[in-house]
Amino acid sequence: MAVKDCGGHKGGGCECHRRRLYRKCCGALLALVILALFIILIVYLVLRPHKPRFYLQDLAVLCLNVTPPTSAYLFTTMQATVAARNPNDRVGVYYDEADMYAEYKGVPITVPTRLPVAYQGHRDQSVWSPYLRSMDSVVLPPQLAIALAQDETAGYVLVDVKVDGQVRWKVGTWISGHYHLRVNCPALIRVNEGKGSYGATTGGGPDYFRFQQAAACAVDV
Image 1 (spheres, rainbow, N blue to C red):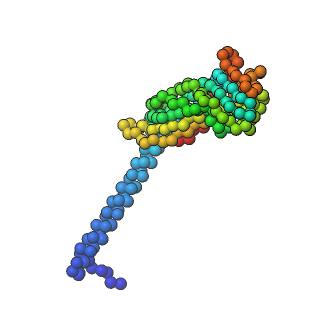
Image 2 (tube, rainbow, N blue to C red):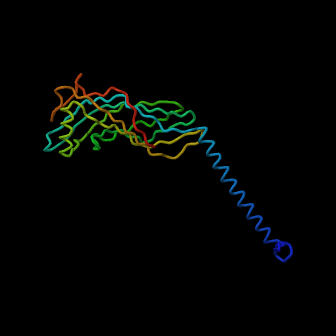
Image 3 (cartoon, one colour):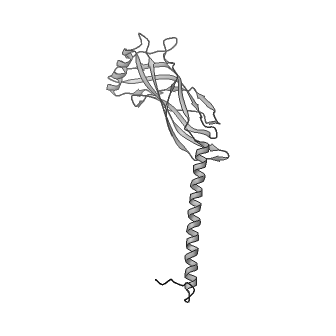
C-alpha cells in the first residue's frame, strides 16, 4: 500500500500541517476538559458539601378556633422554633428570602412568615422562633374541618411546619447562585382534655397545645 507523501505534491505540506494542527487542538481541548473534570472531582472530594440540617425544637399552639363545618373557618396562632445547622467544614450557607408557615393535611393554615436573612459559617447554627398566624380566617373544606375536629377529639393533631426559601453556598470568596430550599417538619401536637371541639379556643395558660420533642425535618435543596 502506498504511503502518502505530504511533501511530494504542491499544497500537500499545507494540508498535512492543517491536519496536525487540528489534531493538536483537539488533543489540547480534550486535555482541558479532563483537567476541569479532575479539578471538580478533587473539589467535591475535599469539600464534600452537605445540605443543611433542620430540627423542629418546639411548637406551641396559642390559639386554635374552628367554626362549625357548615362554614369551616379556622383561626390559629402558633409559635414554632426551628433550628438549622450547617454540617460543612469548608462551605458557608446564606439563607435568602426564607418563609415559614404551617399546613394541616396539605392545606396551609397560616400565612408565610418571612425569616431574617442569615449566614451560617462552617459548622454554625441558626435558630428561628417566629409566630405563625392565619391572619384572615382560613377557609377549610368541610371534610377537612371534620377531620380536624376528629383529631382534636382523639387528642392528637398532626401539623407540618414548612420552610420555603433560597440558599447560596460560599466557598472561600466564591458564592454560588440561588438554590431552592424546601423543609418539612412534622409535629404531632397533643390536645389537652376539654379542648377538642368545634369553636374551642386555647391559650392564656398551661392549656396550650404543645409539641416539645425535638425532631429532624426533611430537607430538599
